[in-house]
Image (cartoon, rainbow, N blue to C red):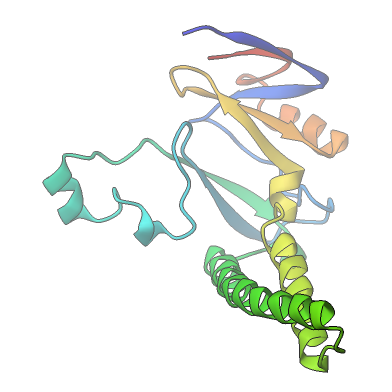
Amino acid sequence: MSTRREVFNEPVVRVAVDRIRFPKKCPVCGAAALHLTRVTVAPGRRQYLRPIWDPSYNPALRRQTGLSLPETRTLLIPVCEDHLYSDEDYCRYKMLCMLADGFSIVALTFALLTLGSNLWLGKTSDAWVYGVVILAIASFILSIAAFRPKPIESAVRIVGFDAGFQNIWLDFKNRAYRDEFMKENPMTAELVSWILRA
């Protein structure tokens, strides 16, 4: 297996996963942190939209197929009231967008077939055809917004892990927050400008 060197314009933070401590302020806006939000990561593993879709989630299925639970880490990141989010709410929103996109694609197909037929025959199309096209475009735009990274994921981006899963590389959007993070973890964190990826 070959390794490649990845160089960063801004240094990223390499910190021990087991002894990580975040500053008591929100990484997104810098306000005082009142809540903790969980960010669970499993490197080198497929991410499912909902946990129950994961084959290794069900204990009976794990025993039957011989699958083991993947090694995961949960980061507890202090955030303010405005940037607190729930995984369940985001998953529900994404599911609704996926369902709406499915119905929109079917309706859009019939609308485009009708529009093409009317153009071929030289007729004017009904208003419902244009309404379906507009609704489908609106549904696709909402889906793009739903699947964009959350503000906390943009502010604290997980770059990767080392081979032994002992250290994690984090990229902070806010430079002042990164400096405070380094002060909170003086013995375990260091700035690195390049990493080796497998």
